[in-house]
Image (cartoon, rainbow over all chains, first blue to last red; front, side, top):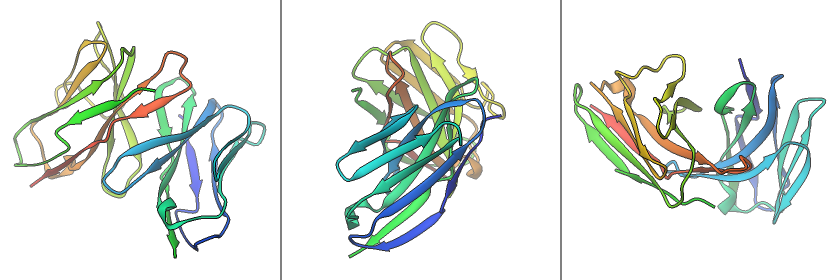
Length: 109
Length: 114
C-alpha cells in the first residue's frame, strides 16, 4: 500500500521567511506532485517531480529518489502563500494519487 | 493544460437523498478520477472513471453508494446516494493529461449533509 507522510502538519511564519515542507514516501511511488489547496477546496498542481529539482518563481521543489524524500521550499514568503500544501505520490500500482495529509501554512504580515 | 468545471459548487442536502455532481473538462482525457476530502482529512481516491468501461472503485467505496457515469471523454458524473452526515465532504474530479506529467483538479463540490 502506498504511503505519503508530510511534515510539519501546521506551520506559521512571518512574511519574508524561508519555508520548507517535507514529504517522505513509500517504495513503489515513482513521482510526486506538490499541490496547493486554498480555502474553499480548489487545488492547483505546483510541481510534478520524478527526479532532481524544479523551480517556479519563489517555489522550489526537490526530490531524492534514494531517500524517498521530497521538499517544497518557498523563498521570501508572503501572506498570499497561506494555503494547505499537499504532496501526493504517483505509482505503486495505484491509478490515482496517494495524498499526504497536508501542511497548513500561515504567513503573517 | 486542462480546465475543469464542477457543478454544483456546493450543496446542503438532507439525509437519505442523493446528489449528482458533474465534472466537465475542456479537452478530451482518457482518465478521470473522483476524490473525496472529508473535513480535516487528506484526499482519498474514490474511483477511476474511464470512458467506455465500468469505473474502478477503491477499497471502501462501492458502486451502489457512488455510481459514476462517463459517457464521453470530456464529462463524468458522480452520484452520492442515500446520503448520511458522514458523506459531508469536498468532492473533486481530476484528470491526467496524455503524458501523465500533469494532473489537474476541478474546483470541488462542497457537500453538507444534515
